[in-house]
Length: 505
Image (cartoon, rainbow, N blue to C red; front, top):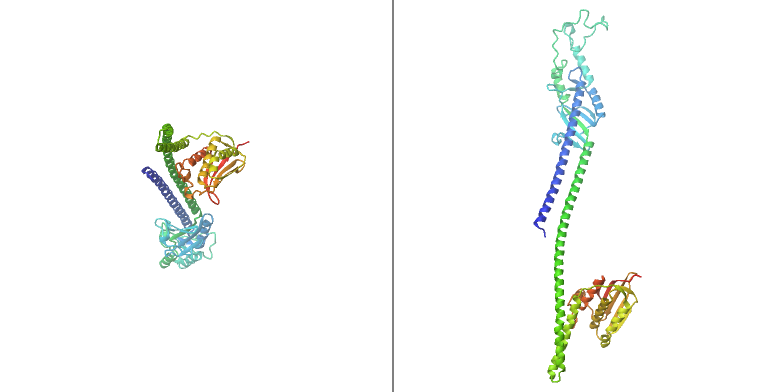
């Protein structure tokens, strides 16, 4: 039965187990979050590097980037690290430039977890382009288109009116000008007072050689607004899987430890209860020994008055002046005192401690002597007694062995009818043990009584005391043997004593 202390101990163990599992779950979630942040930081770093690369590849600070040059630079960046793909998207999420692994279906914004979308062993990250505080997005156009725009702009410029050429460009040379002379003539460079000042950052407004309509069209279709970075997620997934397995192993070990503590506590409680029972059994056994000694002493002291009563009854029966009725009553007194005395003797014999003094005993000689002692009872019922005992030497207390065999054969004599058959059989079982069997062809013992028959005062005979077989079991167990009651074929009972040790030569 569970006590309050047991419930408290098991409750503490359950709380420790729950805390351990919760702790490992929280730690794994924390590690997963950190790894997710590391992927996000790595993607942000790569997008920043791509942005710097795109700025460095612009045409003369005009805010225009050649797509071929940009893809070549990004391709070199992809081939030197864990980058798998880089894509630039415009305001409509259309691809402006792409390098590496192609992304067929770009996930929606809701599918990103912490800015990261996991797709198998890859991680897709999406970042807006941030090239400066007041800078417009870069225009990614082919180099051929950029050169065409410049050519068209220069063709539309009227140099005859003294207008300065566009910033960064030279006017066409005349037929008499050599290549080593300055293009502005011997009078020196033309005055720049009419040239509009250069803006501090050309990317804050449209390039001067673009029309407003063309610039707006490029902003809508060719401007880079978003970086899509695809990173290899294998290192992160491997680290996450390793951490998960470590947490699982810790959880299993913690569960085993908690279960072990629980079993140890259960065993400790069971051991304590068993020790308590042993102490109580020892006290009860001591009390029973004291009661046994007291009962044996009482039985011994009772025999003396019975002997006096028997003697007086014999004197009265032999008195010459005693009437016949008195003599008949005295004979009844003598018979009853003899019966009670016999019961007291058997009780004293049963209560006596069995001290086994082992010696070499000839089993055949003891069996023959027991048969001779019961010769009168055997002849009276005309019983056929067969002694089939090999001449083997065993280790036993000869007096106790003789008593055990005597009680077993006497029990068989009382059980069989007139002209019955009793067989005493003994033989070697192997080189170390022998067995003894006493069988008869009497009514036998029912299966439900075969275990009860060795208990004190249990008997199936009207004149029996119920202590004969109990004494036999005491003697057998004192020697370390075993006895059992079996069915004899075709009828009767069989008592077998096994594990009888042979005398070592």
